[in-house]
Image 1 (cartoon, rainbow, N blue to C red):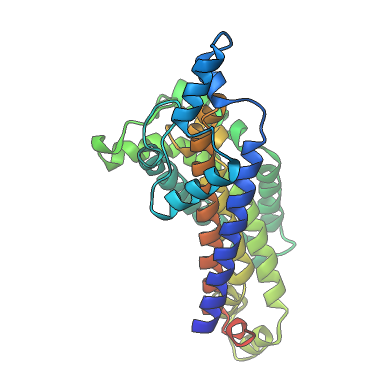
Image 2 (cartoon, one colour):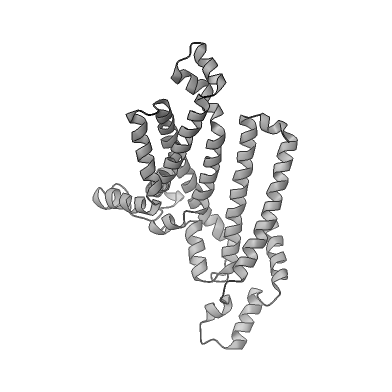
Length: 315
């Protein structure tokens, strides 16, 4: 297990190096100069040059890249061009919205998908199975921002059970904060739960045809008992893959939902920073999200090895 973990950790490190190079140089080639953007069209060239020097934009791209990476290794993500605030503080303020939102949405997705997938697999070809598959097809086809707008219309405008947007803050208490995140989490969870339910159903149906499942049935277990005791664990590997990918998507891809609900999260921060040409914020936040995505993938790989010891013996 140690050798397997070290190999995956090395892969994680190499992926981060490649990601940092791609993120920095792709963002750097985007047209537009941050200093010119901040000072406006009528700014004098010497004023622009002075601001570029103050922001550290007058050195070579390689020097800026090395300074950026060196700072991140030490926990320093630089200073925002627009707000003149350390990027670390800006990320710290907003990650406590995006991270709980992603975890909340993932929990809801799993709570919906697991029972739905198991129910559909246990009733293959029956009306219950077709109903679940029809619902999941709808969930896959409809984008999450449409669900968001419908949730706002029904539960915020008509029923007035929730607010239409904004975040009250954790200082108001966990129940109030979680209530602010409930509609966004549901909007994110519904499409993801549809995908996860279909994967769970397919994985379980594949397992049901295995020899060990027939042996379990021959020993007197009912179809449901064999499914729950033996089939579920063996079907978890593809399901873990999807859960890991979904968490990565929910954390890094919630920009539209954060815009719809006016949530002060990382996605909204990226959107605002792109609009303001605040490159250091965009680079640092995207790199942080990439790191978290790669870290989740690393943890999923370790979960594979825990669920299926055969993977460890192949390394």
